[in-house]
Length: 166
Image: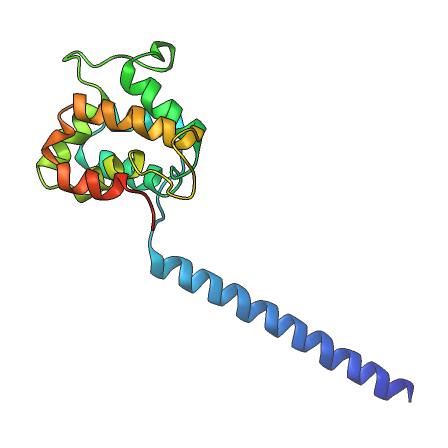
């Protein structure tokens, strides 16, 4: 009986090792197939990239922010404050005086879907709440800021988003 129990334990241990080896191999294989992931960065770093980065960097920063901004009051406040230049301690101002929203509007006007998605994301109301809701109040402020930056060139896209999620 003792030999049978030892044999059964050895079989289970071998099965566990094999399962772990397969899982690790699967994880490594799929990690290589995906290619390198997007670099992780903080909100201030992403905002700085929007204002000062090249076209590819701005696209990646726009995607990163779009993925987290909806309903996140703090993120939208940071974006609006950065666009208004109230966070000079976090980075230099552009020499040409343009803000990250000015650049996003120009990029969207040039056909950059990520920039347009960012503009839509920061102006999207949440229809589940009224205008007094903190998020909706900030999106009204964002809509004004985008319009002041020249975003009035996209009235259909922004108007569709400002109606909120159905």
